[in-house]
Amino acid sequence: MSGLITIASVVDDLFKKIRTPFEFSAPLLLRIYLAPIFILAGYGKLQLGAENVSFIDRFKADPNVVAWFGNPDWGLGLPAPDVLAFMAGWTEFLGGWLLVAGLLTRYIAIPLMVTMIVAATTAHWDSGWHALPESKLTVPWEWKAEAIEQANIRKEKAKEILKQHGNYEWLTEYGGITILKNGIEFAATYFLMLLALMFMGAGKVFSIDYWIARKFSLP
Picture 1 (cartoon, one colour):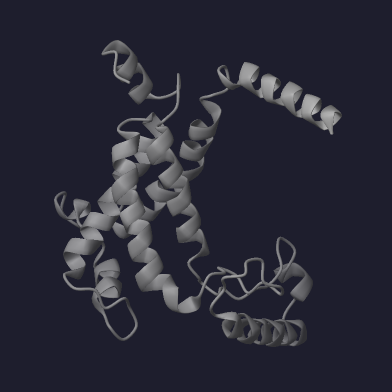
Picture 2: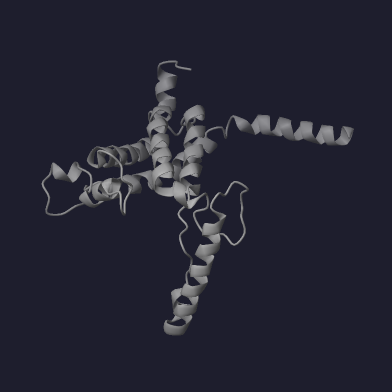
């Protein structure tokens, strides 16, 4: 027992010694991971790259996204869809770039977490937890286990059809065939990563927040 305590003490001391020079790595990696996800998601909700629209209209939400936000039959059925699509798009797009720069990180994490809550509760909640129909449950809190079973039945049927009528080896050369279950897994994961950034901040050295705090002697 004393030997285990000694080993644990040595490992703990080692982590304390290397913590300072590598303290920036965890928030930096979280920012690098999340930033392109939000930038692309926000860009897709806006008309920034649209053709044949006025300069002003380029900065508005995509009409197709607005329709999806507002339609109760095949969309989310949200109120004021034009406003919400506009807010979600710009929050994700600008928020992603702020994460890249490490600027206002704690502050932008909050509205980004709100977008993840909205996405989880409106677009994904009815599909349960898992994003894909895992053959075995990887978490005990999946509340749509029957959807996994049904998705796997459809996946096997799709594979059967493709093997009979398509070039299955070519189709699966770069990845197997699957059915999107579309649960809240990704939205919840991004929420937790943003929550960590909200408390940790952008990290040292590789963030504008760090240099601003250092210049003005902020905590």
